[in-house]
Amino acid sequence: VTPANLSTVQAALAAATDATQLNTQAGLQTVVSNAANALVAIEAAAQANSATATTPSAAQYLALGVTGVDSNNLAAINSALNDADITGTQANTAAKVQAIVDAYNAILTNADGTANNASNPSQTNYASIGVSGVDSAEEEGLLGDVIDAKASTDVNTVTQVQALANAVQAVMNGNATQAQLEALGVTGVTPDNLSTVQAALAAVIAAGNTATQFNTQAGLQTVVSNAANAL
Image (cartoon, rainbow, N blue to C red; front, side, top):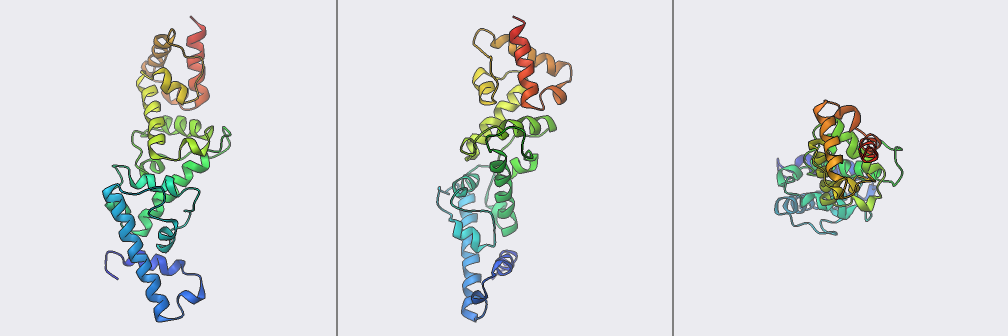
């Protein structure tokens, strides 16, 4: 036990609900050692971007006292450790690791394939897994709306979530491509009308109406459809 890993060891002790884990000195030592070793592994994976779909393991997260990791989301959680924005410093305590897990689970829970039936992840949730560029209420709203209609397999790597965040940012910049708009679930964009659609996006931005017209997927679709139909 060191000052650096004490809070993690304490979290592991608090999570040790099995009476046989703490009823002997050897059992106590096992809980402490497993927690310390798991923290080293997870912190090192974040620092070196060396996580795989199966390592660190769900058992190592559990050894820290971190909840919410299982075989269904392990690969997604580990993809966050491989993001350049998530270094060892962001994963050097159980509490920090729990924040990463909770953030990704919020995104995966939202992605249930049914639109408008779940709470959108927050800007903090996205940042916690290493996704950048979600820094306004309308970006948060649009991205959450889009993810809500996706399946969890569409957002089970940070790279996939970042691509959607980049598409949202492109909308806010008025230069979203056809592929980006389609990734956001927008229909009706073609090579022939793309420049018109982009001009319509730019007009919303110039009018200062992004907060009300780009904050949902339906709002964005309306702007696009109106522009395409006006041709």
